[in-house]
Image (cartoon, rainbow, N blue to C red):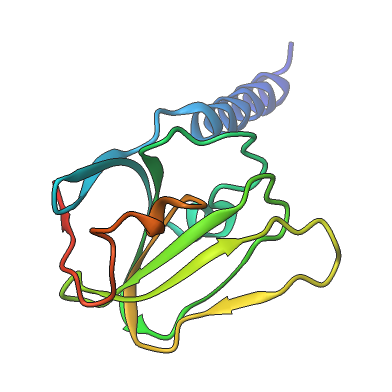
Length: 147
C-alpha cells in the first residue's frame, strides 16, 4: 500500500473513533438538591449537549433529569422538539435560586413547536419529569444546591 493510502485510512479510523467515543462516552452526572430531595442529573454544558438535551429519550427515572449550565445569565428559551416525554423546566439564576417553573411542557413532533421562555434571568435550567415540580418543597425563590 502507498503511504498516502495508509495515512488516509489512519485519519479515517481516528475520526470514526472520535465520533464513536463522543457519542458513547459516559455522561457527566452530578446531584442537585431541592432541600431534602436529591435528583441525579446529566450535565449539559457544551453547545452540542445543550442543543440535544433530552431529545429522543423514552423515559427518565423518578429523580433523574438534566442540568443545563450556561456561561452567562440571561432569559432562556427552550422547546420540546423531538421530545418523547413531558417535562417540568426549573429556571435558576446565577445564585441557584429558582426564578421560574414551567410545568408539564408537552413533547412536540411538529415542525413548529411552542417555546418556553424564562421571564427572568437564568444561568441554569433543570429538566425533570412532568409532575416533579408539584412537590411541596419545589417553589420559586427556593435555593438549590449542586454537589
